[in-house]
Length: 88
Image 1 (cartoon, rainbow, N blue to C red):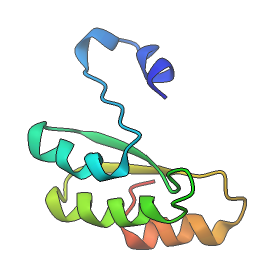
Image 2 (cartoon, rainbow, N blue to C red; image 1 turned 60 degrees about the vertical axis):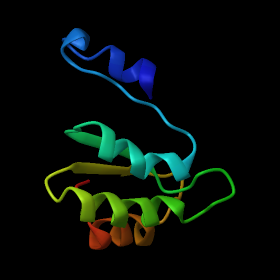
Image 3 (cartoon, helix red, strand yellow; image 1 turned 30 degrees about the vertical axis):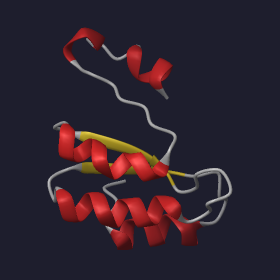
């Protein structure tokens, strides 16, 4: 994702943080101010960890835009992400 976001129209105007350890993600929001979070629903074999993080991040900052991504092919997964609080 980092390479994709670096092609943003003005990449120098933003900072991009990448974290693959789900246990460290929630702590980042305590250390930095974010406008957008891009979360995968799964973290390796932790298939629903993204939903757990979505709930934690939403409680820490209700204004944070949270976009959930997934390789799941069912609309039920997307519906659940939106119901739990994902922005998109």
